[in-house]
Length: 113
Length: 116
View (cartoon, rainbow over the protein chains, first blue to last red):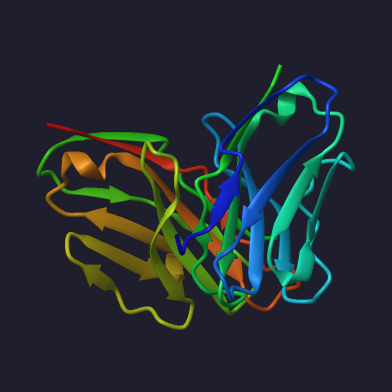
């Protein structure tokens, strides 16, 4: 399809393990965002990529969280040594411009047990 | 710092009633963008509208309308003649254009339930 694709759609992991979440943005979109949505909560900004500029990492909650974007396209969000409080839906979005409408993927539901 | 407040956590209406979802924002920028997104039970966020801070014209799209008032820093969303399919969580969001942080700041969302 032509939308934002995220994988896996669901991930259950044991506390202490590392996980990688993948996002394929809409082709040609230069801006890519990661957000986290905890149960019953709003969306929490994590990190933002714009073209070749240095990413805005101001929303990452701890140094266990990191993200990269290879070739200006696919992005991977990595959570090391997962904790139960990391359980949430992780949403990726992309937009054609810095302030254009962002199109969201369906998210990855992460459960840490 | 930017902030978006959606004071209504949950709203319940009966089908065909009109309903207004409130959104109040805070920003130090003179140029910014406001958005509304819909999150149905399937979970995917659906873009509804984007409004530039220099454009205070109210907008109507079918049963949806938006009232942007800079004087009160509000960007309210009205659904006319609501339908059961309108049941979802609605998020208001803000993006500053002048600052270094260009991420979207979301409100906490309003859960709208439309009863048949």
